[in-house]
Image (cartoon, rainbow, N blue to C red; front, side, top):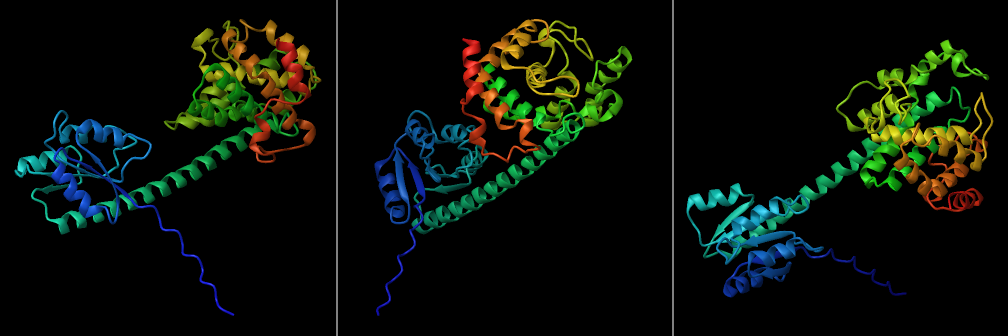
Length: 380
């Protein structure tokens, strides 16, 4: 029986070299040297070169003339290096300007090499090959750094969220409150206009809002009835305790977590604690978390209260708008409410202790289910 030949592995896509020169003969010469090994694109002036470079299919290397009509090669190179998304593309000047000063200027504006005309074909091919290989190595290293950075960030985020859950386990037997809180805060933030990066930062730090409860005695924290004046004084220390636990940091993640822990009990009218901040003097993330925290507290059973129905919760939230809550953010809260109620169902305390990886992420995002439908009717 004849052995069938295994199909050949697909060849990797060819790298792309852009030749930017205003002289057709030079373009033909360089294209002829390179076309067998690379995809070659051409541009006859600086503006056309930049259009190709900034397109969705940028080149892997640029051979750039200096003396071109309109924008010269030095200016083109400066524009490339000013673009964070394109500055890594290697630029080799290929030019008749042969003085040491010309070469010095070319390297100063960001070129990796400088070849003078008339060119030596073997030198051009060798340098193109060398700089493409270096660029490939650089990109591979940058990708590894990005992957490792993402892993470290994910680890930090999980540590922060687990610390938040540690505090919640003291007065919430499942600890699911911090998961719901994180999603609620992100949803309200997105509905209020936060960009993706800011919304993710809020999502990853909201869980630390009550870390200061670690410092509150059980007799106060777990008391089933109303707190006395003295006990309230103790309870109201938890934002400052939380800020002390987290500490001051240059790190954005920890600095944001500290801000939330310290300010999530401030009230829009200035009657909150610990500092009695008013209106927009309260950091935005603190104002958002205040809404998310109260909403979840009302909707779920606590040692001192039963869970409230959606309609009753919304009435309490409405009465607190302008006093406890920022009215603009309450509007965002209502826009996010159907998805928030989906989160309420997904991470309900009745499911027992959960983590945010116990369900697929998409299950926490769409608006559906009986509570979501109730929310739509309640906010019409």
